[in-house]
Length: 352
Image (cartoon, rainbow, N blue to C red):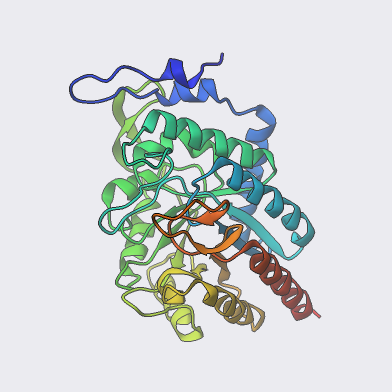
């Protein structure tokens, strides 16, 4: 069964625009059995990394936000080829965020405003988001995204191998309930103030069963009993103008995780407050963190990098630039490839 976006778009009434149900969108853009198997295996690969059954380093890398199908696929093709070359030391996951949290106002992401005209078109946005994630997954890449609005995940959760809970939402009870029901590993970021206690509380809460409101594939509201998700870990992203990727900060975080009986694995977000909003510092930070791993800290799970085809970010009011971020500044593809090859060489030498 297939359907065009036109048939999924419904007339607007006085209050809201009816969107396709998750089942309708999945019927329009179905996932094939072999792709389901691939994603299940990729999720299991991340679980092995979390449980020390695989000693590779996980690298979550990609644009700050997905804004263009063509640019995302071009980036994905390059990353898939590089991943195949470096897979003995690096488990590479593509960052593909279709929602963007905003401190105040701004573009909220492809799922909400795919035409970037400020009008909003979630029927088209959800369709575009699922289509792009499907195509990226078909390249063989594990996909990472951020769960911002819990309902959006109903449309795309079957396509992703890893999910982030952001610094602004780790305290949210609905997001903790969402994590407890997700079928994949989840990284939970420390708060924007730099404190990690809220993330630890979220990990503990998400590991338990919950009774929660849900919307099923047909759009019906109901209650669901979630199973709990034990495959969570901490993401350190700095906060309040302070960094937390240094040796002392990581060791303190691991101690607190152990004290609270949480998995002591830590992934470092090399941008945001850790880079003090200077995206090119991601290179130096990456080497610092990998040096800690080589020195014996096996609880350093890996890195998150913001990277696109063109360095930096686009300025408002200027002609669009293919493959350049419209949200946070990103490393260029050239710098990204050089960095990942350098980290691969360093890790390989560290085994000698």
